[in-house]
Image (cartoon, helix red, strand yellow):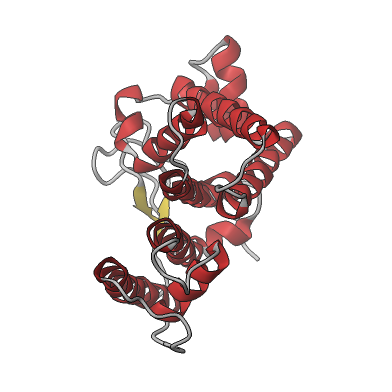
Length: 267
C-alpha cells in the first residue's frame, strides 16, 4: 500500500479530495499545486509593487478577490489537517490569516502604509513553495535546505524594505518609492553603503542596524547550508507529528512508528 493510499484511507468525501489535491500525486495535484505557486508569486509581486497612496476602485476589487482565494486556501488546509490543534502553532498559517484580514481592512481603515508591511508577510508563503513542489520534482527535495535559507533571506529583505518604505516616506527625502527602500535594504545588508541614501532620523538608523545585524546572520546561515550538506529531511510522523528525520530512517525516532520517506531512488 502506497503512502498516498494509506494517508487517505481514513478520509472521505470533500476531505479526501482536498487532501489528494494538496498532498497526493498525479496530474490533478500537479496542476493544482503549480497553480497555487503561480498565484502566490503573483500576489507577492502585487503586494510589493501595487500603488498604496492613490488607489482606484479596481485595486480594491483585486484586494477582495485575492483575500477570498487566500481565505479559501487557509480554510481548506485547516480542514484536511490531521492535528487541527497544531494548525495555528505554525507561524506560516498565522501569516496567511494576517494577510486575509488586511485584504479587507480598507473597509474599516484608510492608513495604507501599515498594510504594506503586513502584506509583505505574504512573502512568508514562499516557505510553502518547497513543501508543495517537493513531491513534484526531486530537485527541490535534494536542495531543500539551501532553498529554505535563500527564501529566509529574500523574505527578510522584502519585509524590511516594506517597513523602511512605510516609516520613511514623507520623513526622508531619499526614500520616495518602494524601489528606493528595497535598494537601501540590500545595500545595508551587504554593508556596501554607497551613501546616496542616508537615514537622517533615529528610527531609520535603528532599521539600518537591524537590517545589517539580522541580514548578515541569515546570509551566514545560507553559506553554512552551502558548505555543510543536510542529512535530514522533512517527513511528518502521522503518530506523534515529528517532522525532521534522517534520510534513511524507516521508523520515527521519537515514537517508533513506521514512516515512509519518499526518495528519488538510484541515479
